[in-house]
Length: 116
Image (cartoon, rainbow, N blue to C red; front, side):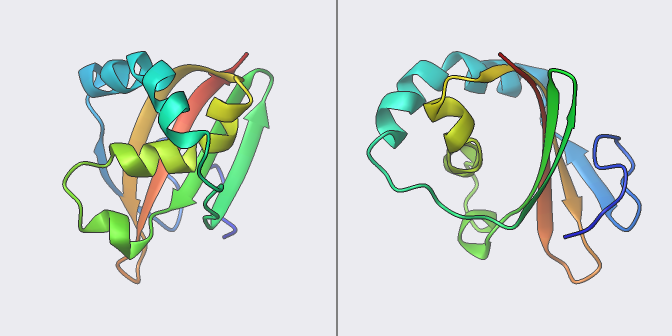
């Protein structure tokens, strides 16, 4: 992947699909302690991703595999996509989770969060 300005809401070359509600982000953030226990023994899943870092704020743009697209609950994908940050305890406050579609119909998810 090679998108420009991945830390913005409107990413050139992608169609904005929607934001995850702040309450859902807060619930996910609060459950990270439980998630750590549930993912620590799993091998890290590899995703096609692009990263951007600006000071202590990090942006990940992650292509969502088809097996997660079909699920209505996306928490498993969030866990897997952020597993390295959860395992290393460097995941700070999550500011936004946004969905995009590329022109081939694939889904991408943007995570913007602080690094501890």
